[in-house]
Image 1 (tube, rainbow, N blue to C red):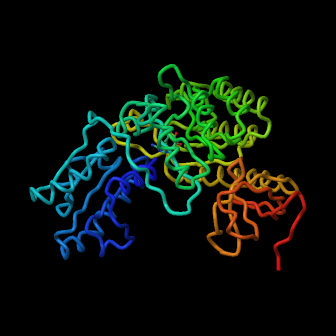
Image 2 (spheres, rainbow, N blue to C red):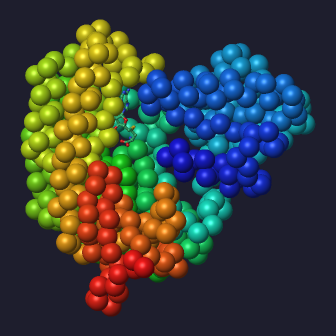
Image 3 (cartoon, rainbow, N blue to C red):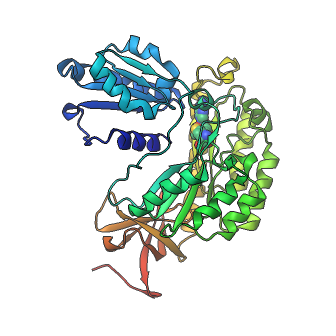
Length: 428
Ligand code: SAH
């Protein structure tokens, strides 16, 4: 979501981009507040720019996103070299804020939630990139006790089908073949009688669009309609990111997640019964207040039982303004760290095993470009969102190609390109 917002900022400002703040007339820091570390990152980025602003007083320095939304005015007090604070719902006001700073020679804060979001903008697109995000929803209506998102992004607002289609079409015209629909609980999207499953079907009609992904799904909003749409629409990728957070019912209740472990396992069964090769990934929080060794073992047992294709796991981080910040039965950091390491090591084994099980299979890969580490390798992703690298030519970027998998690692697969069903070796 932050990446998407940053692209929106790039597009709205319409300025030439530079990675070097020394050359910039305007420096914008877009921030995340999900865990304390992210806050700190924002503060240190701001701190680092102090000397530059001193040397270049006409340079405009702005901070936006979730940290800006959270602290607002106080950021101006703590960072005297800062010119603009804008929030998560005032991105479209940024060009105006910049010209007002220049004109009125004063600092600006604009973090209200009431601003009418103008979604119409020319989407920013990096030349040659074949994948893009399209936001379908802002904010969140769930009440997870640990989560700062509803506080900093506001209540759920869904975007109209027309807006979503218009933006997607523009991106497809710019050469994008794969769209990831994004929202905090993307599958709760609904608009004018349409549900999320309908949206997937509507999106699939866009010519030139090869693949559709979506993230992040909320377990309780997985419906039969959604499962049917994934099964029936060939363009929809066979991957769902479905955060479970914990395998202990006691902790799930304290987290306010509105489902039990059994309910979650049942929904996965429904998904897998309908789409046997569906890749399922999840998020886990360890060290939530009151998490006992037994609760943690429940999570480990869930990982073993479900065999996720991948997990993102985090130590609980108390966030200001959330209910969980008041929970006093904290788990010591050493314990949380140990649990996190144990969980990640265990999941690694599962991920490697799953990746190795693909060896010998033919996968359809959307070619994204050169491999980061070695430009003679081409990289792309399977429908299951696994990265595949193989020796080949970059001129197939943006195309769907058949690749036979030869090796499976922790974070990627290696393969060989198939042409006209014949195996061709590109090794010279
Ligand atoms: N609604 C979005 C964004 C949530 S943030 C989504 O579901 O993807 C992504 C993950 O961060 C969450 O699923 C959760 O596992 C983790 N997270 C959120 N708040 C946290 C906190 N206070 N401490 C630790 N991890 C947290």
